[in-house]
View: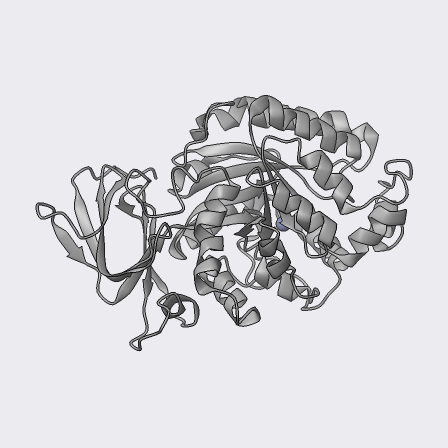
Length: 425
Ligand SMILES: [Zn+2]
C-alpha cells in the first residue's frame, strides 16, 4: 500500500556514505526531511541520529531494464549458453500458460526489487491487465509498453494500444502517472514505449513510436544488437530469426532493405525524446561512437548476468565508456537471470572487468540509471534536494584502499531500503 510520509528530519549515520556526487565519506550521515535529502556528511546538531552500524549508504539502485512478468520463476528458462532465438521460443510458450499469474508475479518482482535496494526501475510491460501492483509499490520508474508488429498489417492495432497507454485510459487512470509532456517525477511512474527488437518491429512501427515519443516527451526502450543472429537478420534477412518469423506467419521480406544494420535503427531512435538502447552486445565501433555522440538523450543498458547466461562475446563496455556513452544497468528478467539484484550485476562486472574503476561500476547502477531514465535531477546521487532513496549495504570487517571495493568486491547484503524518506525494507 502507499505509505505515509514521515515528515520530521532525521540523520542516518553509516561507516561509509557514497554520495556519487563526490568521494565516499567515512563515518558520515545522510539527513532527510519530508522525503528528501537535506544534508550529506556531518549531521546537523538539532536532528536525531540513527546509527545504522557497519554499513554503507548508497543511492537507491536503478534497474533500467526488467520484465517483472517473469518474477515468479525459480530459475531462468533454458540452459546457459543457449541461442537467444531458441530461448525466445521457450519464453513465448511460457507466456501462453501464465497470463493469470501475471499480476502476482509483477507484485513479487517489485517486492524483490525493493528487497535488493532497487528503488527505481525501467519495466517492460505487456498490454492489458491491471496496474495495481505498480501503483501500490514504493518502487517507481518508467513503464515501457512493449510493441510488437513485424508485419505492416499489425501496426495500427499495436499503435492503438500505445495510444491507450499514453493517454491514460481505463485501468491505467488510477496508477498515479506523471501527466504526458510533464517533466517526469521520480515519485510517479512515467510512461514509455518499447518497440521490442528489430526482428519483431516493422520499421514503420519504429518510426511511429519515435513520433509518439516526441509528441508525448516520453522515452523509448529497444532491444538492439543483442545477438550475432540479429546482425545477420538485419544484413540479409537470413538465419534463425527469419525461421522463427516464418514459423509464426510473421515474415515480411520487404520490411527492410538488404545491408541494414543496428546503426540504421540507432539513427531512427536518435530522433526520439529519449531512448534506452538495451544490450548492444554486438555494436561495431561506428555504432559505439554514434551512441557516445548522442548522450545524454541516448543511453545503453548493459545486462551483465543475462549477457553471461547466453555466453555472448565480451561486452564492449570499455569502448562504450571511451566513446562517452552513458551506461546504465539492467537485470533483465528472471527468465535469464537468477534474481533481480542490481548489486549482484555490479559485482559481476567487477569480476568480469577486474581493472575497471569501482567508482565507475557503482555509477552505472545509480547515476547512470537515473540519467538513462531522465531522472538525474531527482535521484541517482545523495545530494540535498534529491529524493531520499537509499540502499544500505553490509560492509566486510577488513579495510580496502578504495572504499568502493568494500561494496563491489565483497558479498554484503542489502539490509535496508529507503524510498522518499521512508524505510520500506
Ligand atoms: Zn529485455
